[in-house]
Amino acid sequence: MSESSWGSESELFPYAGGPLTPTGRHSGDMDEDPVIRPFMLTNGRTQPLHDGLRIETLLRAAPAALSAPLRFESRRIVELAQSPMSVADLAVALRVPLGVVRVIVADLITQGFLDVEIQPEEFSTSLIERIRDRVRAL
Amino acid sequence: MSGRSSEPSAAHPIAVKIVISGGFGVGKTTFVGAISEIEPLVTEAELTEKSIGIDDTSAVSGKTTTTVALDFGRITLDDALLLYLFGTPGQDRFAFLWDDLVTGALGAIVLVDTRRIEDSFPAIDYFEEHEIPFIVGINRFPGGQQFSPSEVRDALGVSPGVPMVQCDARDRESVKSVLVSLTEEVLAKRANRERAGSTW
Image (cartoon, rainbow over all chains, first blue to last red):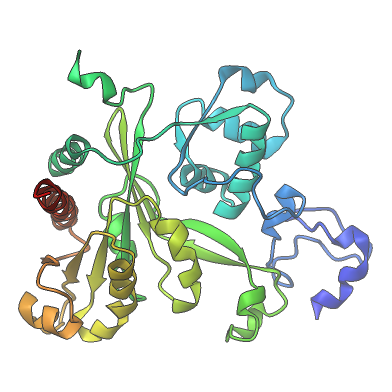
């Protein structure tokens, strides 16, 4: 089974379309091992540094974050979040699982590149009525 | 003082979440897709240590994570108000994801397939236990036997206070009407609570 070949360090970070591994097998060989380890993007971390990031939490990036030296996924997030985007929106746009986005987003918040849009403690009656009326008018 | 000062502005939009639940294959994806403006799918990766041994799909043994697909929909209601719909994962073994999905939700819709009513029990139990406002949507399936809402209510064992609506998850107008019914239920619950509070 393919897992048995995982002792070699060069194979610990397989990503689709990657170079040939020392065994001569394409690391992105989808037939043999379709699993792309999702938490590779977070260096294996699965716990966000920032609690309370809900699936619908809206995030917004400061325009200045665009000139920060960020790596690919982080850069995409600050680009996308120039207008408010939820954690779920970002997961869909980046095609990565929510858990992965939470870790990257929490890092960006800690680094000051992303802000959480403050939400009301409780939905007001007028807000719920507004939701009802807007849905009806869709 | 303007009463609008606390209203959200375009600069600070509000995100509202509604949870769509029910058994596997009850029509959650169809329901969300009928009204969402985006592709109705998002994934969640979870460590699978807890599911090793109960995962009957031998092909995935040895994975360090499992990926769960969740239904996800977004509706821009106005420039400062976004409505998100999230479907709960259909299989019981992903129930540990529910708390995260449900926290902060405005309310929930439990879809029911009258051919498999029992599949909706876990969702109803969960929302009752967590005191989340919810309504039941009886999804019409072609060829499915028609039951009256009161028959379905008896079969589900939900209290008379829980609204039951017929719907067609494929039909945008029907889905809109279910969402409106849920907002009405949330408003009614709130009015009741305020009335109860004012008697003191």
